[in-house]
Image (cartoon, rainbow, N blue to C red; front, top):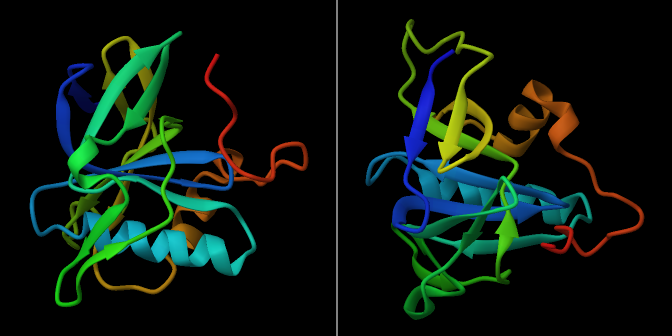
Length: 167
């Protein structure tokens, strides 16, 4: 099993969102497409009638509460999303959100064509599935993530406004 690990409590170069009840953190170097992929996923979720909100763009603070990774945003950038070529836009935001999976954006290649299915992302003592997604401009990144891990994505009837409360 391989994966990515970060220290809890430190800002991470990442974009995080919540769609339905599922928290997703996007990882990758500057210019890899974190913001545009997150925006596409948010747009897809809204088209499905799901709750969709930005947690943080560019810098995400990841902490651990009860073995769960929780994302939040530094105050100065809360609610802002940078879309290269378009500018900085305001977007519906969420406060602290439990993350359920991490997505590492990769370049299309023969090596990354069939990613490992058992990779994990660790933040301190919290671990979650790590998925790889080509940032190739393909339409429907949320649909692709849902196809790969359908058990992580649902809109629960009892919590239509998104992520369950952190206890």
